[in-house]
Each structure stands twice: as structure tokens, then as C-alpha cells.
Length: 193
Image 1 (tube, one colour):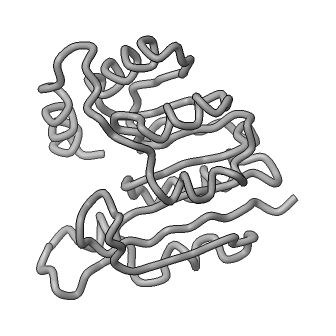
Image 2: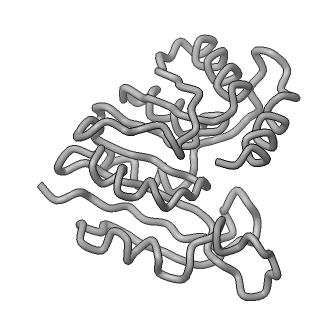
């Protein structure tokens, strides 16, 4: 992650009052597919304020959350404590933080795109493990010069995991998206046994 991006995320979460967690529900895509998420070890990559991590921890999963922002991690740690939930939380740059091999029963990645992580995601999941991701897709009507870096190409996510059992894939503009009228891609895929 560039220094500018790291500072951007630090600044975004720095304004949070200590011990206060803004209301953030888990992603609808996660809630829809949570029934296939094993209750074992889960990693939430680029977790932000941790709505997804809290949701799965409350359902009995052992959750590791990783984010670049120490402010986000601190806020989530306090929220988990207030709710009586146990989370393992790490401040780390996922550009350089290695994911362990065959460690997780599920990997979550919501609105965080880091293509070089795809091979690590594949290797860190146990056979039969589930991968859930939702992130932005390129929008031809936007003139954003960073679009290729921060947005998937059409069907890129599906192609990256098409050798797995794809339980569901969707791409388009969804009214329930937490980011308004943005185009997103969503996948729920199971690693082959």
C-alpha cells in the first residue's frame, strides 16, 4: 500500500471517539452466504471497522482481522470488548504481510482490492474453505485514472477463481450496496477438497 493510501485510512479512522463504534452492519453478501461459512478460523482482510468480523465472531467463528489502520483496529478492539466478543486483530500492510498456508476455513475480503493477494488467499484457505469477496468493478462512465488499480475489470474476479466451486457470483449495481450506486462484483467460492 502506498504511503498516501496508508495515511488516508489512518486519517479516516482517527476521528473516531475512543471506544465508540459507528453502526455498521455486516455486508448483505456475507449475511446471505454465512450459512456456508465454516464456524472455524476466519480471516477478514482489510476489515476496516469490522462489521463482518463482529458478525462472524458472534456466530462462533474464531476471527482474525487485519487492517492497515491502527485507529480502526483500536476502535474494533474496544467494540469487541464491549460486546463480549473475542477477535484477534493485527495492524498490518497486506502488501507485505504473509498469510499462513492452509490455516483458514474462510477468507473475507470486502471493498479491499489487492490482486497480488489472490494467490495467498488460495493458499491460506484449507481445502473446502470458503472465500467471500465484494468490491468495485470498473465503471465506463467514470473518468477515474486510478480505476484499473482500485476496480476490477468485468468478470475479473470470476476468472481469478473459476477453478473453484463458485457457489454464487454477481456483478452489477445493487441498491443495497453500502457504497450507493457503485458497480460491484461479488463471489462466494469454495476451495476444492
